[in-house]
Image 1 (cartoon, helix red, strand yellow):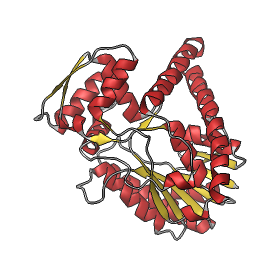
Image 2: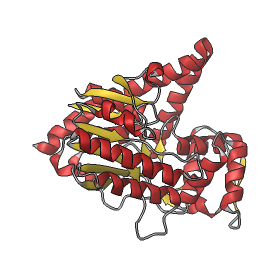
Image 3: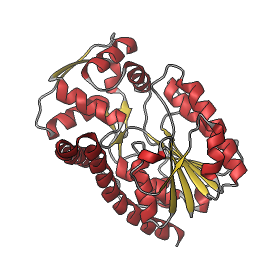
Image 4: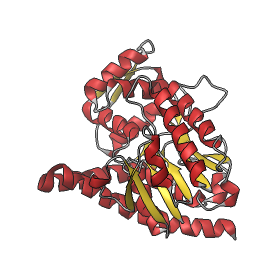
Length: 334
């Protein structure tokens, strides 16, 4: 199947593309800068903020993955909605048989954050195209380069003692990025996945504070956490910007979302794409190992080598994910 991946150079996309190739698909990697793309698949130019670029990118494709979202602008909701509308229209014009979208966990009965509301709105916009849509909803994705994971790791590594707000006691269900890729590949050709949304997560339901403590233990660090209930989201985002690589706007969006419990409430995906999900500690070890390999490669060639090392690690993980997904799909359809 010829498949377009929108967001191919992103955290999940650069792992998904090689997994799809491994699974036997013809992959078009959509990026704003195809001349610098070094990942799996055939690079094609496309930008959801430039609707005219989407038709040529999607021409001849049977399905597409939509992995596009933004958090680094105050008005990201409007940008996300506009991008989704443009992509939905182009997908319908191209006659796609499926769109697979990676959204966010969260109970619709809750007062969802702007970030999670935006994810739900994108789901609705894509579904309104008339193209069958499969939505996978995830919480924190653990893997080298993921914003939420990097925020967790850097907090632990930079602060032996932390003054934390109430959100550290919110429950979440983190998932390894390799497992996200397995699910994404696994649902693509399943007829029973069309027009449905699924919750995906790892086996561990944890409070954010427990996640940080586990990372500290794995790295051999001691971390003292001092809860301060009155610490506001604005102050929290400024604090994050000071001690991590996460910018203040993105940090504020993430912190607002951390007031929402994000856990799996329907695990029916486990029947359709059966495999044993990675536990949190193992996912952390995998992420730290990938980071260490990338850092070892960086001095020999600077940023380029770092990107190549990350790409190589992603392809290795994706090869395993692609093989597992094919087996899972075969099991599910028998």
